[in-house]
Length: 166
Image (cartoon, rainbow, N blue to C red):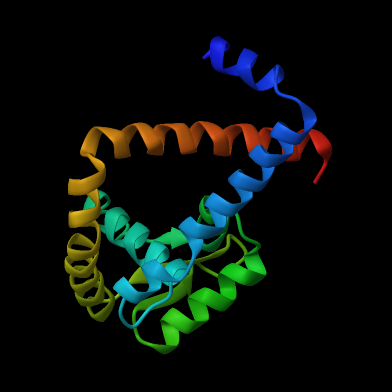
């Protein structure tokens, strides 16, 4: 790792600029609409929320798999307002129920409906078809390593944003 950092620090300004561009371009390409074509009936943020709710439901039988809105917002690094918009779409489609404890002062939470569960199961099949060949060609170990590196990069980026006060 240190050797890689040394290589980067020894790059000239033009080469570093190319790294910035390449990183921006690759993040754009990963977020592009290709994945949207594999998903049916939902957008990527909706799918992520539904999948998280499904995981929560499977691991938390006591509270029925509920997630508080602030948890979703934190997990996805989006504002509560943006989270509310996505959840309203999911609720209007019948995929989640939105509720609160008591008077709601403790926050509101969402839980996945049976219709939402059916959608996630269908989406998992679509995702398996979409990513199955990609993983096969790219390599399982390569993908695992890439995901670990992306998580490390995300941590560094988040840290830099916090230090810069952004």
